[in-house]
Amino acid sequence: MPSVASMLPALDTPRLLLRQRKLDDLEACLAMDRDPEVTRYIAGPWHDPVAHRQFVEHRIVRAYPPGLGYWSIREASAPDRFLGWVLLIPDHGAGPEVEIGWRLVRDAWGRGIASEAAQALVRHAFDTVRLPRVVADIQAANTASLRIAQKLGMRFVGHVDSDGAPYDRYRLERDDLRAG
Image (cartoon, rainbow, N blue to C red; front, side):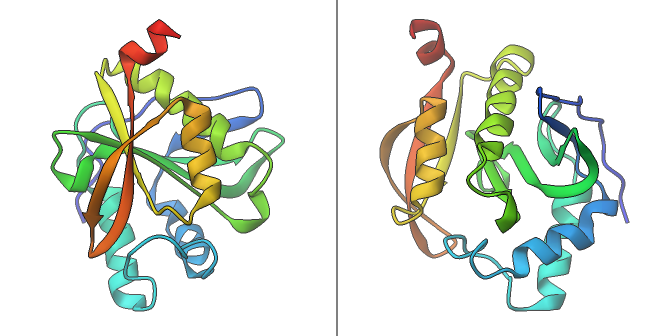
């Protein structure tokens, strides 16, 4: 199996430890995705155990451009407990846009964890990687993710079809943060 091409920086916040996702996180990621409420608004191979494992393994070990990839989220007060992940990856695997995303285990919902982790990724995207913008595709019924996008300052820019499902596209420009 190929190894991860480059190391991602730790992106810690006062409450959270964000570390590059590794194969050690695979079983926790698979368990999270098996919760139908967690993947309710996301197209993916969640119901096929073999395809699901291959999909997540590939996302962990594949090479991403410098500064991009997945970070596992853990609480600083419980560093052995997997809470979910955040991502900054080429949109649809190829770009040119870069997608920001988040997924948490259900018992971590409603505590501001996804917003706090995503905010750390926004700073990394704009200050370190020097991206001009990030995008997120969110189903309109996914009100929790929509709130996170709004907290980040993302704006609705249109509709897209991704993996055969309709999503609303949100975008945050680096210049939006400077103006605010």
